[in-house]
Image (tube, rainbow, N blue to C red):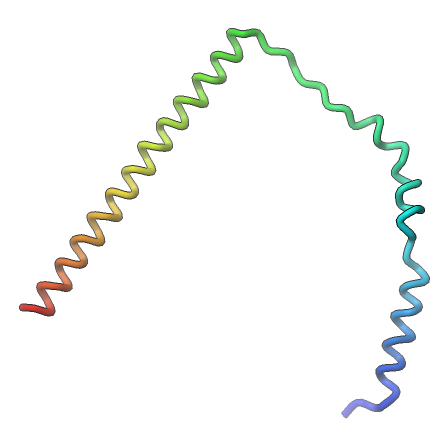
Length: 92
């Protein structure tokens, strides 16, 4: 069994950890200089390239919709056939 002094040891260890922590102000000052270096630069696209990318996205979305519909149909057929099979086994 634990002794009565064990909780006091835990509190003492936690206090020691709190002294080692850096304050929010210290952390903010450490990262202050990094904000200006993180600007994003994007490549400019011509209208033709934009249309090409848009067409690819639309085509992929259409394929995804068809594939999703196929999966739903397969699942529906499986559920129907399993349901009918169980029904005939129970009733027959």
